[in-house]
Length: 373
Ligand code: BGC
Image (cartoon, rainbow, N blue to C red; front, side, top):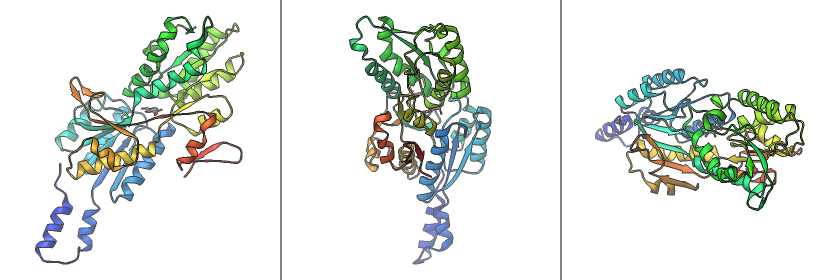
């Protein structure tokens, strides 16, 4: 890691016997630069992550360079290269494609710039730490929600029809969400209580490139047209996140003739999806407080920049439920990436006020939530 310019400036000042810190040295003290690379502005959550991260780091006295890469991994490589050329002191990266950043990661390693993989793991050993939510638990919560809603444990001979939409295969998280949910649902599928009428269950078939709403919508329309147009009842659609749930909900509204009590899961608490929850169109979302994710990232980055020992004691520096995990995530085989994992929660129409309590959303007189600017 680079020597801190501030330390050099301060030593020089002290050697001269100066009693106050000159303005120039104060400026140097502010000069550590945080390079933040986010995947895209086309999905709601990354706009929030970018804003929160920028605000947290700037309030703590850092300079921030924040870039978005339009969901294009080659652009993200060159965006990161530009950040490195600007001499950032640390990189915080949410990858478009966790396997496509090797060129940029090798350069970061050469320049000894530490990298925090933010939310999505990057499959390269240059990554020092990973900050995310417990991604497997996100999926588990979705699966368990479905089990409870349909009371599958007491289903007897009843059967329910299920369809599945997962996330972007390039995003390391997508498999965790899918596995977390499917590990809960598979026993009921195997027992015949849950029936996937389309037969489309494996990850590659149900995945959605770039988590794109339109892609999810079109696949759902095809499934509804092919398997449900004859009046077959659809009971539940497992969606890994809100951008895909938005597309699936639109398809169900436009292309499904049955009653509209289909259970739809999601993740993120995007404003459009919260409106759908109020309207009874989407049933739940797994909420991840990304403001808290940015606070954890700030603490971690500060500890790295200050050369502190990093372990579970970092979790005592913020009042946020978070586990230090040194087992679950590997950047390459055998190379575990120490991770700080926050805890997700389930939001339905019945506990929307929990979102208001975070201070990040407000509820209008019409009952709809908006994000607080
Ligand atoms: C994030 C989710 C998000 C998805 C699409 C994932 O990596 O963890 O919160 O819904 O990307 O943006």
